Image 1 (cartoon, one colour):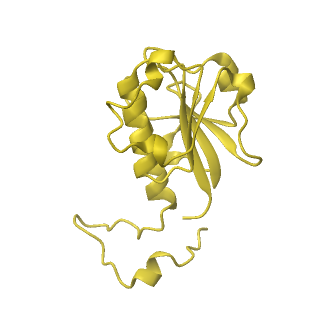
Image 2 (cartoon, rainbow, N blue to C red; image 1 turned 180 degrees about the vertical axis):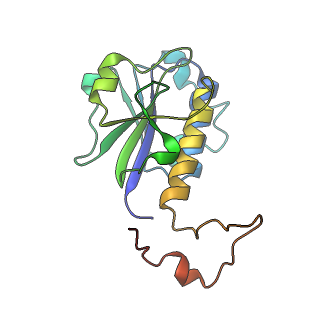
Length: 173
């Protein structure tokens, strides 16, 4: 998969949620993870981060939106349940981006939403846990950009063919 991505959360306060997000980021191959305005207790993730992701994925902790320093060319994608957001299944993921999720029992701040190049929503009837939202988003990125064969029309697995064909360029019209 070409490109890179990072994942982070604004205003997180629960260490179990942050630990789950860090493990998920590590499992899906994130290049970095971050928090913005995290509650100090949320950073005590050692009980919940059994994969010790802090040792394997670079972590950045920023005090506020204005302190964020993303790599040049890195698009910021907000994951937020708003009426004008793009539904995740219809969203084309940028090659280089950072996904940012909102706090527990809250949303991305207006300042963070203004900084985002894209706002994407997971099409659910109500909000899901922030760590679940991170996992859904990263799974969708993997499906969209991971070089997997298209899903079959009939139930069951695909006719796999050769592994080289999985990564062959797809002509989209």
